[in-house]
Image 1 (cartoon, rainbow, N blue to C red):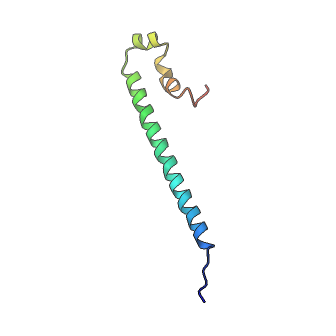
Image 2 (image 1 turned 180 degrees about the horizontal axis):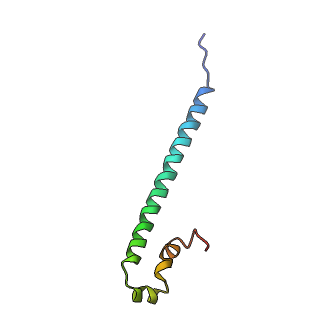
Image 3 (image 1 turned 120 degrees about the horizontal axis):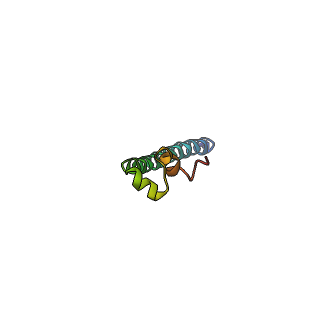
Length: 72
């Protein structure tokens, strides 16, 4: 008679799912950070006059780029 235990498989699957989810969240965060860094660099390269036309002050560039997640 063979004895099979199915208790190990669900917990292993849960751990693997958690690890993959964590990797996915990290990658998503990294990609978003990189894209926003590019936006900040592009805005910092503009002249004060160009920024003024856009309604942005130089010291508020980071706040402008992250305005959807920072409420300051």
